[in-house]
Image (cartoon, rainbow, N blue to C red; front, side, top):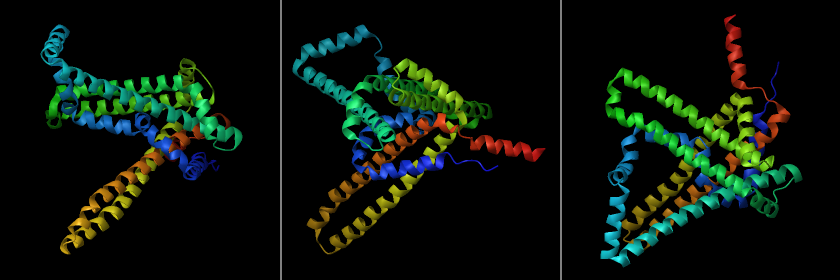
Length: 336
């Protein structure tokens, strides 16, 4: 029996929508800050921290040395009395950094909400209506903001929690078969936990936007959706990894097209003693490189949100067959 393709039309339509609505890429760029907590990149960042936990805890160690709040407050107060102007300037800098990070988080959350609201407008009305999406995003923003904040916090807690055993084992676990086995189990549990958190958060966002649910009902609905479509979610997750690899490959090709000619031109200009002209190549090349990475990141972020959104809206109607289940079924049939 020939199985009906489920992902192929979704990915094709997502690619067409992403490429057609390039004006929305600016929202994709702003949403990239939090999309990394939803996508597989969060897992890669966690694996990097697990393989090098000492670096993760170096900054935490400095805070732990000053864990006594009374001593910390006394030291800061004495510093303020000795030099109040510098202390106020330093406090203002930290407050400013916190405000910028909070603003970036809010901007990224609103961009994600607007993109998904635009997709909802496309499905219901046949077009991406920016004004409609931007307005509708306001009504869902508080729910999506808290959903993304909880996801961001839990993602980092998960990384820290699984890094603790690696920190205790140290780098010597590479020399012990038992510790290697333990680390493999920890890696597996971390990847599975991170996949559940990221997928559940994605489905929760979809429930808030498309089904107009509040946070807790959306979370419950997201869990039910995940349980009913575990294998489909895994397949979508793997397809997203493949899509990111393709985007990264294209970026490497574009970067080579920028760097190689710029390097050759720079060498020729220096050889011709045109140093003034050659000095202009560095900022212009850097600008082109930053622009390439911004466009690539914005494209992938937009593609990620639209593909998951389209899949979520078609799960109940299509009830797709899992390719993983079909493959396992085929293996068992061959053994009979």
